[in-house]
Image (cartoon, rainbow, N blue to C red; front, side, top):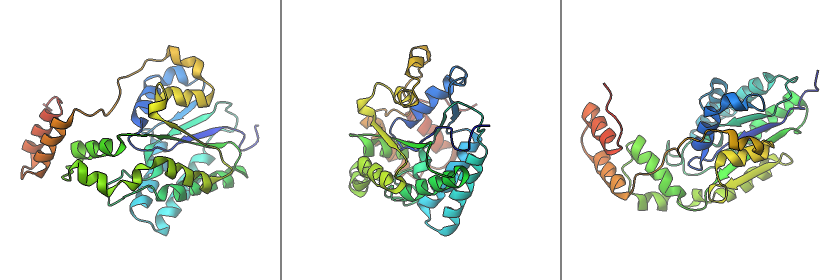
Length: 264
């Protein structure tokens, strides 16, 4: 039996709107090809969702109950890993940094260092140390707040305009500062980062870190996820969100603006 904690575990913990969905969709599409080389836990995997759920709750409500839930779920997750499996483990869920900026009155990633510190503590309790645990963060140098605003407008009936959103969340856009705080909180665990403007593809950046970049030419690459449709569509969606429409009529009009097919 391999000693506890000798597996390499990489947690890609966000941030939102930094290519996380594109990375996850690429790995999901190619899971069969990757399975021989890496044990994947992606956003829609049951165990990943259980791990991320209390972090999101803690970001919205800083209390002991939420902190305890993060530690408990991480303990269960790490205890369930097979020590005899030689593959590295790759976990990816943006909510491991907290909740989406602007949602549930969350204005920044201040909860992220605390949450990931609790996850590191769970790893320490299960394995006896910090060796083997690494963190990965994707960032974005430009357009991040506009991308966050777009997602809120198209999904959550956001009514604030982009200029207001940018004023309210300007501090949160310094993602490198957030990573620096996380790095300090989890030292000596390695903390890696990449800006999406500086890599060919977020999934390739993850493969490079895993030492599996030779697999890249063999992968099927899906279209980029969650791309914006232009400022005219943003303005029209804002007008719709501010309207008095409700129910089926509202959703029909929103789907039409987004170019989505209507449900049967």
